[in-house]
Amino acid sequence: MDEVSISGLTKNFGDLVAVDHMELSIPAGTIFGLLGPNGAGKSTTTRLLSTLLHPTDGTAVVSGFDIIENPVQVREITGVLPEESNHTIYPSLTAYENLEYFARLYEVPKDEIHERIEELLTFMELWERKDDRAGELSTGNRQRLALCRAILHRPKVLLLDEPTSALDPIAAKRVRELILSLSQRYKQTFFINSHNLPEVQRICDRIAIIDKGKVVLHGSTRELRSKLLAKQEFRIRVVGDIGKASSVAKSMNFVEEVEEEVDSISVVIENPLENNSTLMQALLSNGIKIVEFAEEETTLEDLYLEVVKGGTA
Image 1 (cartoon, rainbow, N blue to C red):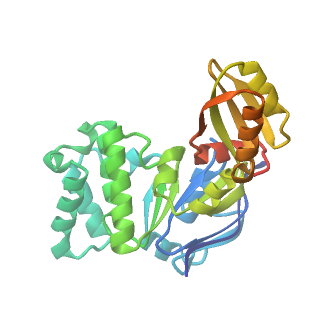
Image 2 (cartoon, rainbow, N blue to C red):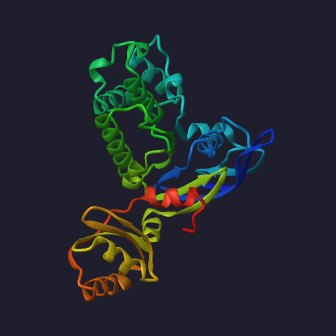
C-alpha cells in the first residue's frame, strides 16, 4: 500500500514552474530520497506535502488524507523538518521545554512524554543540555533538537528537508542511524530531500531525481544502481607503452572513453561483463603486460550527474 501518492502535483510562482506535474508513489515503510540541484523543486515539494503551500494543480494523498481536502489531518500524521529547521523551535525555551510543548500540542499521552523526550535527547547526545535555552545551542545542536521535535509524536510520515546539512559527521551518522531505527521499529515512511548522495545511497530504499520541477528518473536504489552497470569505468595498470595501450582501447567499439595517466589508462566500457575479456585479450595480444584491471567504484552521483546534465540513463 502506498503511504504517499502524488498525482499531477504542480506549483507555479508566477511564470516559474517550481514543481511540474509530478507523479510519484511511495510505499508504506519506505525511506525515500528526493535528489536534485538547487532550485529543482525539492523544498517546494516538501512544503506542498506538508500543506504549507497550496498546489496550482494536481494533488497528493498522505496516509489516506488528501493535502487539499484534509490539510489538518495531514499535519496530524506528519512530522516536518523544514529547510529552516532552526526556526521551528523557540529560542527562549529550554531544549526539554520545547519538546514538552510540542508533545502536548500533538497530544502525546502524558505518561509517555518524559520517556520519549529523554530517549530522543539521549540518543542525539543532548540530554546533558536539556536545561539550556534552545537559542544558546550551536547550529548543529539546534538542528538535532528540531529533528527530535519532528519525530516526537511518532508520525506515520516524516518529511525531512536536508536533515543532516548542519551536522558534523558524527551527528550526521547518528541521524542516519535514527532514521533506520525508526523505519524498522515503527515502519514509518520517510520523504527526505538531500544533496548528500552517499547518504541517500546508504539509507534510502527508493530514490527519485528531480530537475527543473520534473521527475527525470525514479526507482528502487537497486534498480538505479543497476543502470550504472550498463557501462562502467575501469582502471588498467600496464607495463609498457601507455600510448599504445590507449590506442588499442580506443579501437574497441564498446569503449566510450579513454584517459591516459602515468602508469595506467582509465576506460569506460559498455556491457563490461561481456566486453572486459575482449579488451584484455586485445591488450595482451599487442604485447602489453597488464598489472591490474580494476573496477572503479560507481555511485549514485555518477547517475545523478548524467541525468541532470541531460544524459540518456
